[in-house]
Length: 273
Length: 99
Image 1 (cartoon, rainbow over the protein chains, first blue to last red):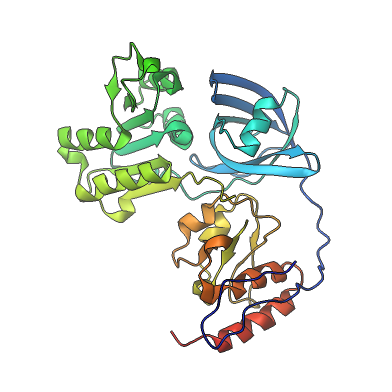
Image 2 (cartoon, helix red, strand yellow):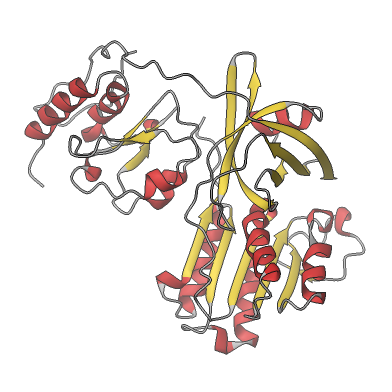
């Protein structure tokens, strides 16, 4: 392999070197998990259940792992936030969007139950600060809801009584998965204010939707306007979704005098190729 | 396409990228290396590392600033022969204009 860089500054020769021969002998990843079930929320959104052969490592709600499927001899991997990890740390629930050009998501959609997969280590820094007693504002768009569900599920299991607001943005109301689960946590005593919103209220697919409308950042601004005590250090925000949403919501929060440390974010990046 | 760790990592080596890489393809050897390296054969282009680097040291290969073009080679070479990669890094740093 030869790497040819862009033009270098004057006085430097461009890089053009052969790589040294490899000394590596490490084996590649092996199958270590099984696809147990897939439930389609819509044609392009699904809830997957995967069972790992061995318990995953220590998991903090909000973290993710890489999941992979073999296509011929190539392992196609992407990281997905974990919605729920069972008490044995082998049962994994994921919320996945099938992208038109998404190599892994299309493979996962085509995979039958029983398909062998690869699961990587649990990773990520987007985790719940359990010691922070302030109310939590959680904003997730699309499958960006996943790590927030893990956090809320953990709070429910621990009978935490710190108030939370969950804004879930989606294009269409049929994509607002997990509402019943959040309602169940609330009915069980978790003080969570669940605010689903659809961003395309005039589309035919949203006919009959009587709930909130508008983008997540609009709902966030409305929340801060109706509850001024949440601003300026009165709460901590957790944002997960596409970079545009993160940017828009961060702008709203900064305008409300949120300190940078009180805006916790997890970006969902599209592949670069 | 892979991601590359460029000069701003040198002698900083914040470990956030290691904590978030879901395929464990960012490495260095303590006491021997001055920067972390991304394995181009292991990188799955998720961008997790890019989001957390406090030194703005990580770039997609296609967006790597020209003055740091050597770092793509250094990262790739480190996974084949770390000693050679370290020698080239030292050479590149010696030629780099003072900040």
